Length: 367
Image 1 (tube, rainbow, N blue to C red):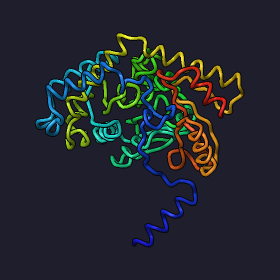
Image 2 (cartoon, rainbow, N blue to C red; image 1 turned 180 degrees about the vertical axis):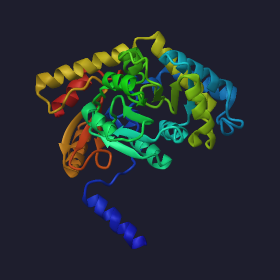
Image 3 (cartoon, rainbow, N blue to C red; image 1 turned 135 degrees about the vertical axis):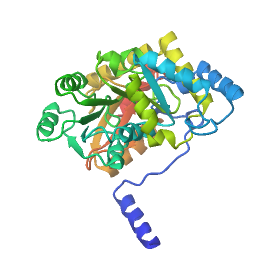
């Protein structure tokens, strides 16, 4: 068996797909960070750090158990209420991670839907949620409502869950959310949106529901681990939907709750978005980046999100370019299969509020 493992790992290296963890510290490495999803820089914001310290002093380090047993604290309740108000939903529930939230949502609905239709480029957590729930799954072509309609027409059952990311995490393009909501109105299907990379960025920070006036979306999921600089995920919806998830989501019932100190910090991050112009700073950089891309003719399809992608194709070549950029003082994301299709390896560039125009210019010149 050991020989089989070694052979598999060597094959992965030869294909340019071997991944390595590297300790990263922008302060000591001297790298300009275009890889982090901390889009607003809130992980380093003094008010957020202060709230986390206060949370540890008030609540301790850990939550002490599952939220259904002893792990639900006043900090969790305060964050849930803040999130629901912030995104315009009746109620919210917290998960220790966004991955766990997606698993839990689909699991909780497994006895109420007869099929799940997902975008071809959806995040692994959405796909794994369907697989674990054993709900029959169909995948429609990326951002293609016509493909979805054709698959729905051939589906004999009525109770269907449609799942999509809002901002796709690998390439940063945005789903046709308004068209999907209109299909929901006509077909009476459930629509679930994963707004992990839109929450804190779109809609003045309130997410895609605010940005695109999506008032009819019943299941809204997002994370605190991207633009808010924290950790954890949440689901927001009406009271009955959230109660269903609370009662039936295994990834909620059978895991230790988010540390209350982090819930306290996540709440402070939302307050920073409400009270400062940090989202405006991010969008100033996004607009500058996309304008310069077009002016310089860089091989990048500009997105109206914080994620910009340069598609290279070959995984080995993409890794070599990424390393060359790093040697020049810039860190960008290296995305390879299975995160993207074969022969579509890319450099993922995350625009952040804390970057300077000079730093953006420097990276674009290298590209």
